[in-house]
Length: 155
Ligand code: F6R
Ligand code: ZN
Image (cartoon, rainbow, N blue to C red; front, side):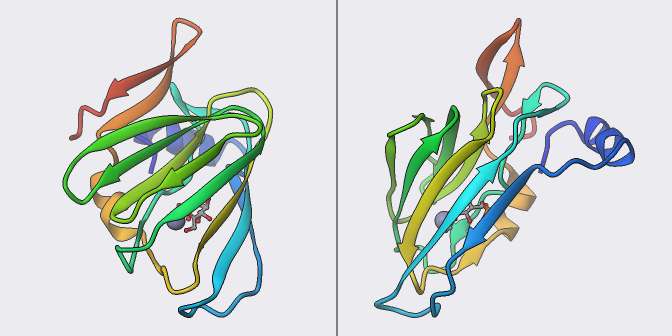
């Protein structure tokens, strides 16, 4: 999932640190239910790119989601099936809405674990293959000691 393949392989060889954890509630994956979980992204970078989640579309594309951030500092990268891209800030107390038809990936741009709560329709399902293949139009990297949003040269 990381842009810099060489740096990713290097990281795997030198300790393979935990990038993120997801603690899921045991809810039936069906219409009418609300799936929910807590995500913890640890601080770190692969090359210049900050630690991130894999990112996905919902299999049932017409389902939305809400992220509520408790701790840390992050970015939410989204891309719609129509090809629009958006990057939103996440910070303690922020509530972020992911509309239907938008894929989503989160990035920890801070120096402490970033923790957020997610709520989504029980029948949303998850499609990881599209993002794994295409990535996102934007990368979140460190540039001159600052957080920068740059174009993904592979898109
Ligand atoms: C569920 C959702 C989040 C993510 C979690 C990990 O629809 O968007 O709970 O699943 O933040 O990210 P992924 O699933 O992309 O590895
Ligand atoms: Zn989701």
